[in-house]
Length: 415
Image (cartoon, rainbow, N blue to C red; front, top):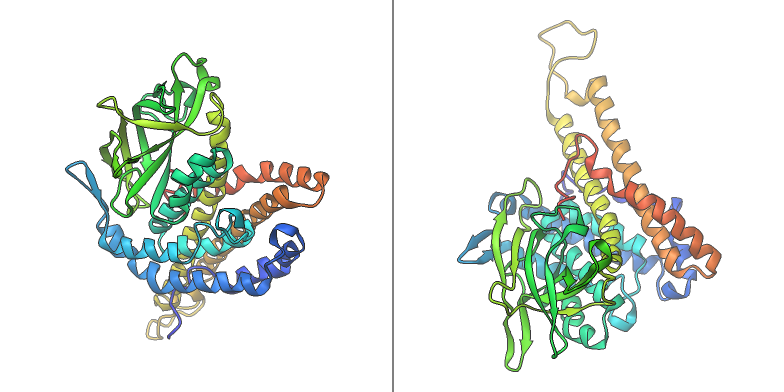
């Protein structure tokens, strides 16, 4: 196979960063990762590289040119997206970084993050469904009871269902203390949910048989402000005696986006008919604290989104500069001599070097952040875990900021 003009991410940069700078092989000495080695890390990287380059990237333009449509209350995604989604699921990435107890592979987050940058670079929208589902399922894994794990987490980790984070409301924006979605307890153990959410990525689509919204709402008579927010699992279709039945969850509108065009951003309505059922995840009035797990994971993912987009742009720029003739070398005044590629001009090289530095530096920070997450959870001593957690808390917002770098804007912040 001929080499791609755009490799998406530099393999040499990845290997240098993982094995020569960060020494991720040393993580294999920790009990959580003892089944792994450089060989298993490389197998994951090779699989994601191949899928990104052979399947995802060739689909990017077609999917961006034909974004999802809202037809009679249902969203129809691009036909190619179904094959891509199933392909990513079959790579095992929904559970790769999760423990064996829930069907995972205990892959270090640092290696997982690098592997997924190839997929994000190949087609950011396609990976978005996976990233959101993983974060939502992990919330249930961390805070749900056994019944919720069986009912919701398992089919999400299997890829049969997808997940979202349903936070923002039209009147509240990012001020989550002002959300008004309500949850009324019932004698049957579930809650009746009523309210509206907006900018819900992947909130409605036809890729999977169900969508589970990890939704913030206020239980009746809960304290005002953020202290009264609880977290609920609210499926599009709820399990019933004869299978899945509608759960009074409706797509109220499809929101235009500049980027992530294959991943629909939705306005959602819950409980229009008084029959939207939700199940409490974790402790009542602790929903915002629980949701921060998914938000912090999303921050690392968003940083990786920005790095991936920047990397694709850089490699496109290099290829264009190598093949676009214009002008002549400085000092050559002979108009009949051949033009040279613009990469031969010093100022173009300066701009390319700036792009290269941003991509390599940003990738380093994102992966270092992910490695601190590995150590915060699995380092052998409390002192080492505490130190890693402090550094993780410091670096996470920095890693998230990379998409805002001028010249590399993506729509990655619109989760």
